[in-house]
Amino acid sequence: MLDNGNGTAPENRPDAGRPDGRWPRGVSGNPGGRPRALREVLDLARQHTVRAIERLAELMDSEDEGIALRACEALIDRGWGKPQDVELVDRLAAAEDRIARVREGA
Image (tube, rainbow, N blue to C red; front, side, top):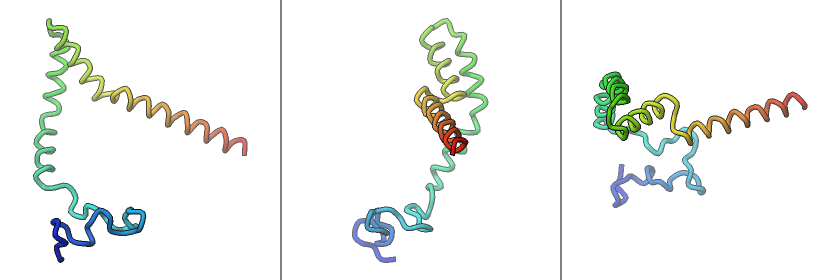
C-alpha cells in the first residue's frame, strides 16, 4: 500500500468511503482491530478481577469512611452500572414499552 504522507494508506483515511465520511458497508475503519499489546494488558488485568472485587468488599468495612464509601461505590458501579447508565436503561425500557403499546393499538 502507498503511504499518503501522514502514516495511513489512502484507503484507510478517516474520510475514505462515502461523501458523508461514513465507511461503506463491509469496510472497516480499523481493519487490524485492537493492538495486541492492549489485548494483553486487558487479559492480564482481568485475571485479577475476582481478587479485586473481594478486596473491595473487604474495604467496605474500613474504619475510614472515605475508603468504605469509595469501595461501596466501586462495587455498586460494577454490579449495576453508573447512575447515567441505569438512567439510559430505564429510558430504553420506557421507549420499548411505548413502542409495544403503539404496535398493539395499530
